Image (tube, rainbow, N blue to C red):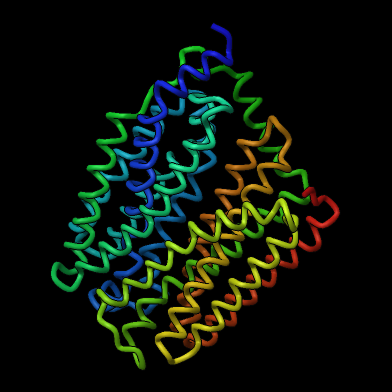
Length: 403
């Protein structure tokens, strides 16, 4: 059987299993990663923390992910991608079930770092695994299922934790999300297909040198640095505004209950619409124009949340979320398109590193700004970060733009 026929057979025979498995893995990973975000006010009250210290419950997880994503990507090239994904979802789910039993905030943070390291095995490896398994003909649909699972997981974890915390407390909320994560992890392990034998990794020094040279190539092009900058700064702005959302919505003058306040995470649904729309508009208006427009919309949405009207704040979050996901979609695709063929996986890994580093650092810095100076100054910081991202794209990417 030739390569094309083999890819077609694999795609037809395993497509449904692949869709189920990667969607389940995405729900597992991202529901666990962001479950503490709506619980930050409760954690602050429980442990006597300011917003900046409480935000470490989120940043510890995303920081662990950022630190581990490149090493795990290298390991996956040597031992195979499926074992890494399986270990990732199982370990992150088990750690999620341990979180409610943390005897102190310090132990909780250690467990979150370990959980972030475990979760890194999925987003850092999944796209390359799908390419190996399905080939060019079938990978697009599976990647779409994976992104949908990631988005649903991030929203589900936040909504579930925020929705039950009034009745179960933060311990019970994390336990419920941990149970959901474990169910999804078991489903992933049961349904995740093995790649064809000829595509499985064969550890060797030559293979390791090839992987490392790919990372070096991913650092040489200025246009790629512009996209890494968008990932770092825009994601930092995004997480900063959502980390402080619980404090903002449950405090004066809005005074919402935690369960109602957690509904702000429904705005994530806008991300699916805006990212798909941005992908279509790129072919018409070009990457540069679409990316700068998306960053501008993100900033406009952030500014709207300064209002004391709940309706205006929610509209602001919808615009902010839609703009961010559109910018993320354009920048991520731009990085993949501009990377040299042998460095595409490496560029994706570097983009992921910048993305979660921004989540960790930006989320905590933004929460500190909010705790010290209030919501208005947090929005100022967010707008400055988005402006820096836009400046980087304008300076570094314009000469290299390809529409």
